[in-house]
Image (cartoon, rainbow, N blue to C red; front, side, top):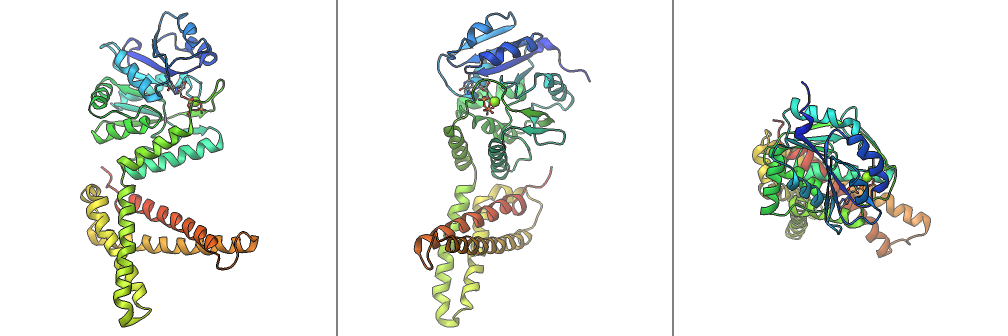
Length: 365
Ligand SMILES: Nc1nc2c(ncn2[C@@H]2O[C@H](COP(=O)(O)OP(=O)(O)OP(=O)(O)O)[C@@H](O)[C@H]2O)c(=O)[nH]1
Ligand SMILES: [Mg+2]
């Protein structure tokens, strides 16, 4: 099928100080109507835009956030616009993909097409640290929102007019995170409301010129969104309640049976954690999964044991390394504390991720 007509498509470019990149990018977008949303650039970005008749410049005078700029772009589009392509202007997103992404939007009748680095044929050619951040972000997104999108953080996207209208309304009801975290906020809202998402492979390359706008604050607000909207907080509360159950059972039974009270107390806390997670943390997913209560209980038991194993292995591994290297002396509280803490964090990650991906995973549609 041919792609949508060029006059029903707009390109939105959120920019801050991207003059050097726009000088090379705008000539490649000559066939499209382009909306550049500029947040107070001081490098002459605006002047470059005025050289092109197909480019509308939206000036906001101060840095207000990447996703806030994208939403501003949506507001400016004419009613005839059926699709908007949003992309970075630093050549990480190759403009030669635009026709393919638009064709996918039509062929797959998708409301959101994601230029994806993580589907077959895609590639993330970014620096190693950035690839790790991207991987962590995507695992956090998928585990929290139970969504099967592989590249939820990609900023190369095509939105349908319906998706844009929905997002602008949704933003009025509850503001979408204005910075980078807004990319996953948008994704979870669209998926949650049943919009169709399709991933088309792209090869992402490192920024060629200009400076990165990503700051540590952006990673923090990403984590905060995952924590507020996801289920990690509830999972932690349930885990803490399990420690209490374990302690109570142990003190109640130890007088009668001695050491065997310990595995019993562990099992009691695993079961109580399971019931609370099933009824509280993952309540919605529990109703959507095709697995039975007992099957989930058995799996949760298994992964909890795995978590205990990971805790011990990490603790002993780290603590003996500390003793060997002289960082800690035998029995020192600091050494034990650090090794135990790292062990608990690793065990938490193992049990949380296996819970979201294997115990309470929603069944495929
Ligand atoms: N209008 C506007 N644009 C922004 C803002 N933050 C980032 N951008 C633009 O959004 C695009 C993506 O930002 P980048 O700095 O490339 O982010 P990144 O790709 O994660 O980081 P790098 O890999 O270092 O390039 C670029 O075109 C930026 O100029 C903002 O607050 N407002
Ligand atoms: Mg970039």
